Image: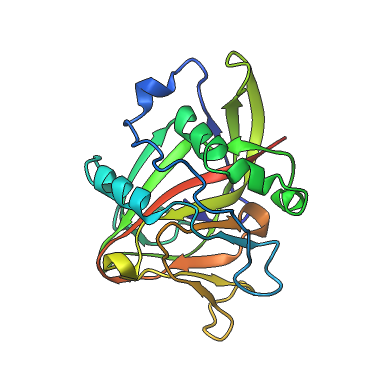
Length: 248
């Protein structure tokens, strides 16, 4: 949820709850991932420590399979009036705690190897150990948007990948947004826009258009940039969101 920079929440993934009991039955990763070598890049010079893009993280065919699947989930429309301190957001969403799917995204997509490369692992704010099992699905239809906000850092308890009975105390440091649609699928508008000087200035904005298969990572918590999800003007913008977790 978008709030002020100082807000922190605690999310605990209960190790006694199996992924199978909560999983909606995600489609398999076909073809096997990654389909190309992943190269982290920044959208603008000087933002390498705040925004990272991984293009072709998922192939278009897998994105299409997931959109068809996500349409079958029980999406909930966000309230029209936000709580005090929250940004205005109008979209449809689905949320589930799924350790198994989070581990698959981390281990079976090339993401872990890419982010833990010596050239990049200093960016993450600590020892990156996995992804937040709190998986969120967002659909933005025509007229829907997410106003300017900051993303919180959260405290998350992860299952130990090799010792399921043990846990790892972590905090989230970067937001991960996986775009499943773009202009190619009829989605227009919906850019994710960052304001590096924490003020909404068109002259300073960094706008990233939805791109099918793109994984966008951006730093959150105390160092989060002010950002927004612009209104979708046609079609649907589909996103899967999780967060990078580091030991604490």
